[in-house]
Length: 88
Image 1 (tube, rainbow, N blue to C red):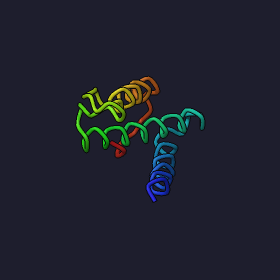
Image 2 (cartoon, one colour):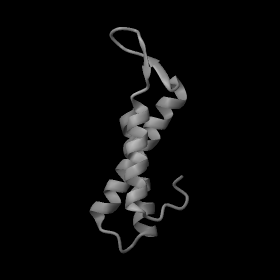
Image 3 (cartoon, one colour):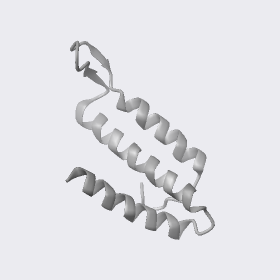
Image 4 (cartoon, rainbow, N blue to C red):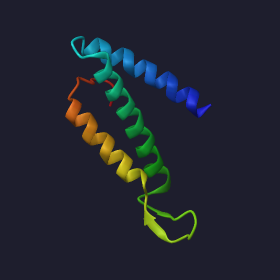
């Protein structure tokens, strides 16, 4: 169910991005949409579980690994620099 929702959201984002960036290559738009989906998923995880989580094997507190995913996705989004009005 979650994978289906992500696929539907990704298709909607792709359509909006194509309309907002008619000169962008399809690959650039796809990469942006994927990075945006990763960013959203990572931020949802951070919001739900927090910045510090328990290590799955040892139980020791660690920085939520989704923070790295979110930050890398944000960097990718900023580097691609596409118009994304209404997607954020």
